[in-house]
Image (cartoon, rainbow, N blue to C red):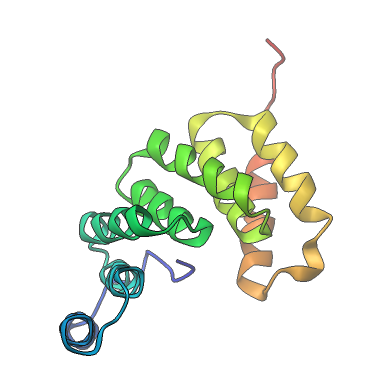
Length: 158
């Protein structure tokens, strides 16, 4: 989920992903992977080549078998990349309610801003800022970007 969506997949990446999907399918049928492992691996693989509809399908299947906040956040990420911001924020909120991970909060704050819900985004960012030391370098950059977006937005009370 943390990989950049601006990077265009190369032919080698497509081949690697399709081989991974084929290998996972074989393991599922012959070795006995659980449905969660099968759909989770395939969902992440499809996401690597920006095939978000396929990735979302697999994450929905994953959630059919097991409720997991990381899989729900991955499904929300797919929806956000497909432009389905309302669905993305719904799933991010569910994921964040079950797992107060700062990375999930960053993604949720980002889509809250896209929806124009600046107070909720500010609340999430204040929570993440207090746990800044738990973020990796990429997440710290994302936090700085969201803080910049919030600082340039004028908030008007209703």
